[in-house]
Length: 385
Ligand code: COA
Image 1 (cartoon, rainbow, N blue to C red):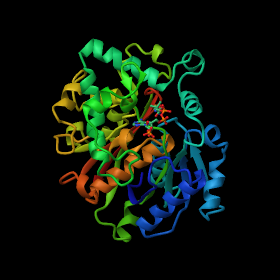
Image 2: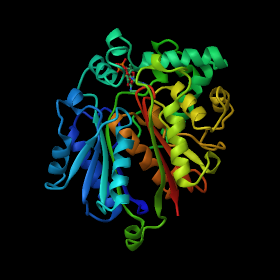
Image 3: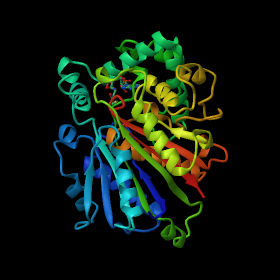
């Protein structure tokens, strides 16, 4: 395999972007990425999008996006793995470059979720759950994560305040990020007094419904060196895994096996352990998700995610910063774009271009992107050389 570097990143602002279409968002992120890379060479395109069909009545993005990017004739493929679609698109792009199939591959993630009503958005997202055994019976993602939150509280004594502190921390970081949908600081009270969504989760425990796109340009390390890229940001490990789609089929709904396996695979490929990683962007689609993910990654012991968050471990100036971007909670969660946006943040940090949210001496990062209630997961390890 050839070594792979990320030489360009580009993102739209995340939010309710009424004046921009799905194709506008994709093209804006791609053009920003090429400008950042300082090259306009693209040999191939991979596109992460969960459901352009349900949100926008638009499938066949593998033709639409190259066409509107002015790249007709370029090979392109759409990658779908629910909310992990973006991360899986980057993995597909990595494989094309590493294998020698293509030298310059653009990985793009896009989702425009606000073109439909809130009810329809919830129903569209629920297609990532088990259609027969979950969604048909009326449960949706806030409901599924609420089940996990309640079980976590019962088994480990995790408190409502500890859940709220995940949102408080991520909004604090997101307030420093110009791309954020909700760039305001909040308090524990804001979370606890917000409207109930699915007990015990309230409005401010949930990631929002978001429009947005993100893109990264991958090439070989040799090509990146020829272009004089400094610091050189490389993808040194990737791990992916799956689990049952339905929560009810898992032996333990508090064990995110796909995340554990994807992390083991990515770290092994990079020749590292979790102790070698300085910070992570993780999939905090709900506050309980961040707590369970940092446990599954081995950053803290099972059951310690809540107390560790309360003790400041995961804060920007903590020992293991989590979601310096503001995460899905504050930055926003345009589902197919999220995995790519996480990598944009990691690269920004590794290049030391993150301004007030910069992590000191950032050299090694992990990004964790998952689909549904953990039915699929992809993890990238990035390093600045
Ligand atoms: N956090 C903070 N504020 C939010 C918010 C969120 N997640 N979502 C909406 N808001 C705000 C809106 O800006 C609006 O504020 P305003 O009255 O000051 O304008 C207000 O709350 C109501 O917004 P609305 O869009 O009507 O909310 P809603 O009730 O339709 O949707 C949720 C709220 C939580 C149900 C929706 O954001 C949601 O479904 N989130 C989860 C998405 C999801 O499941 N993603 C996949 C994960 S696997």
